[in-house]
Structures are given as C-alpha cells and as structure tokens.
Length: 183
Image 1 (cartoon, rainbow, N blue to C red):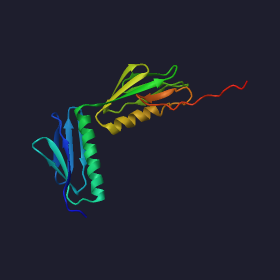
Image 2 (spheres, rainbow, N blue to C red):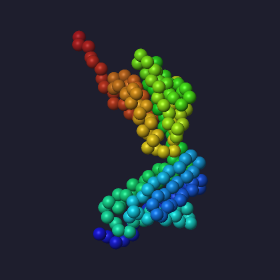
Image 3 (cartoon, rainbow, N blue to C red):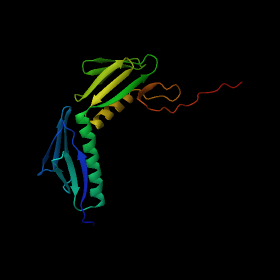
C-alpha cells in the first residue's frame, strides 16, 4: 500500500455553485440547467479551493481507490458541463413515410407500422422537431439523454440493406449488398 497523496482537480464554471456535505461525503452541483448530487466513497476527500477548483483527494492509494478517483472526476466533469450548458443530440428518421410529431409531452412516430407509436418525453429532457424527420434532444444529464435517444432508436432499428431506420448524427451504417440475379 502506497502512502502518498493522489488528487484530481476539476475547474468549476462561473455559473455553478458547489456544496459538500462532509458527514455523508455528498457533493451537490447546481446551475442554470439543473442539479446533480453524487455520494462519494469514504476514502475520497473533497476540497473546494478559493481558485474555483474541486479537488478530489485519496490518501491511501489502492487500485480500487484509483478507479473511484477517476470515476468520480469524470462524472463531475461531465455533469458540470451538462449543468452549465445543456447537451444536445440529433436523431434522424431515414425511410419513406417515416415522420414524427410532438403532441404535448409525447412524440408520435409513424414508422411504417399499421399504428402510430406514442413515446413519452421525460420532464428533464427537452425535445425540438426541426423537420418531420429530424429530432433534437437537449438535457443536462448525459446518461439520461443518451438512454432516451437509444430508446427512440429501438423503435425502428436500422436495417443494413437500404439503411432505413432511426439513427443518431454521424452514426455509420454497415451496409450489406443485396441478392444478385443469376443470368
């Protein structure tokens, strides 16, 4: 067991307030676009500097504590970014007749089935429809946002022959060649 001090520093944006509860070892981030709470491992100490940095420290460096230190610093960085400026994902509907409409807190999809698919929008995610085939989703929590986008993608998976389905922006489709006629 190595007894040296290991720490990570995370810059706090100007519009974010950070508070630490030393008893429960919980850190709370709050900003313009939401709040985030994270309960840290008891081996990790949190210090907030006067120079607007969150410092995560671990005294006894073990393999497990290094993993926690990296995990917590990446979670805090990601959520600091999401709370200060929202994340954005573009979703495209690719196929003839594929359409989406927003009605109240629901998305109504026409995806070539005999019925419309109604998909609920969570409270902490904003949805805007640019065209009938393009959706932009915004959210401060990256994991909830990507989970929501992938749940939408599951409604119509991309088929490899013509590329029809629901895709994210910059997503590559592995296209297959169709049958060839014998002459």
